[in-house]
Length: 366
Image (cartoon, rainbow, N blue to C red; front, side, top):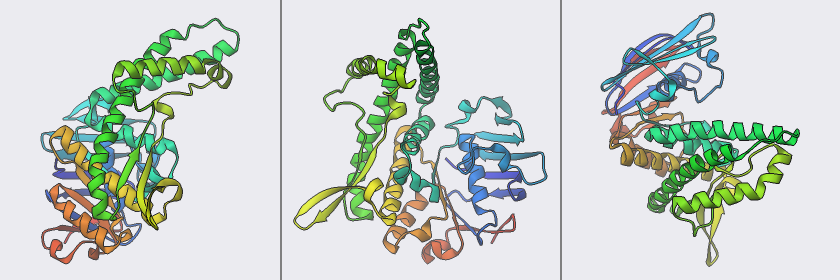
């Protein structure tokens, strides 16, 4: 997938921007607070209909203006997002669409400083990593996940009414939660198992150690969807009393977490180190990089095309070995990189890179 052109109007500090990107490596250079990340955010908005920086859409509108517009052309698709202070409208090929119908039209992988929260942040951040990736490559996952969250909300509401003394039958919501949740679980497990095959070799290249995801929502002896559904049904039954007391559904993919481990040599033993809990900042950064590189490969495997790779001000955070490894990945798909200087990329790559200067909300190719 290639983003051929991008147009912005009143987006953050970018009053008006029209830019055509190279099909390979693009470097946005400029001092801090000039608008580089705003360009990356606008592309992320086209791909996901959301910002990765704020939950308040109105913050994306240029100060003093009533609305912001983002327009991108990518292959056969033209995507437009219009943000006002009260609404957000999305269009695909000049036709207004539901937000869910846009997701997947522009596959991307974003690596920014905020990506470290996948490793060191809350379980919610790690669940979001799973869900955004799988929703981008599978409309059925996106559909199942939306219905599952609604079913959980309805079940929790029913728990509240039961505690108030109402005679409510939970079975209608339990059936939906089990059916949808089991499919979500199996999709996440399938990705985790595939990711570990890639991480096994990737870890040796970027840190000289094996890297592993551990996502184990149910006992390892359970393999089939029928077994998963039975396990889920039994868990909901066992926890029903506690769920009524606490007014929450305590079991399911909405409560899961995963961990990242590095193999660490300690004297004559090899120990697995939980990087989220005990890793250094550098190790957490490398773990996040590894997940993002796996994400690129998985999207290509499932969609038969490479996603656009967005790197926002992260190259300077790596040592020379990891910068060189990332640099070898950049030309394999369209990549858009931001940095405060051109030294973020190897000199031999710069001659093949489209370089843009970002200064006070203006972007100019140099």
